[in-house]
Length: 388
View (cartoon, rainbow, N blue to C red):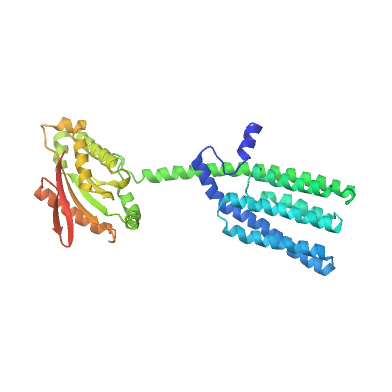
């Protein structure tokens, strides 16, 4: 991989060429980023607590102690705030601000006491070492390193003679070394992390596609019984939430066995495929077609006037090649029983199916030429028979 391509890939941990993959990466990394920042802040808080105990035991000056208190308070604030931030970019800014302010506090202490001791140098180096704790990318690492290094360099050398030249050289070498290590480790981690995210995304897509295929009827492309069993509660809940009436229809082809016996199963399959194709297209996003088995289908519909949709489908079916081939040889009819559940009702699949199925058999026995309402106990259902 070319260096330029590698750098472009590790510049951002959430940006991919595929927008859907970018959104997936943000969702996956949000919790990891929060945990990384909280770990960094928690370790800093623990360090400040230990330093505070050391300062109290040694009786060092108030400048040390006040800086220690400020850094401890900042660490606690970041630790708590990160738990309530739900945007990955805001978490990045929070982490970068924490490291930059930490460097500023150490620099301010050095100016206040007029000394740059080994403890301060170690504290600054630790800031750079902490960069890889957060799962951000090269972009954020470069910003933190650049800001911190610029702050340290301009601040510590701005007053000639304030600090020993040896201490400044040691600080420069350690800061540059730790900065390079932090940036390199961050870039490597970002590359590995993005490869992992991409692999997980593709694996989940493949899994979802397999799960979807397992819910499809291989012949007609309609949904199957497994889909009905797993998704019906969700569909019924959505209708209640949106104030929509859920229409359930059971329909099949009259004397489908006789049709198969006369013309062969291939013709029967062609009819099933044509019916499914047109009904699926007519239902669109307002419903689902489920093949229950053989020539029996179930429709879940939450649009307006299901009978009208079936009428439009029959008109289109009459123009299909398989219907034209049967013209004059056999009359093919399709019967349906339809029942509806209002938004304020609790839609139960078993009850709706039994009611619609009774209405279907009523249609087969009476063969109504138009849709008609019938009473089945306390339920008002509709029946209809259509000629293909």
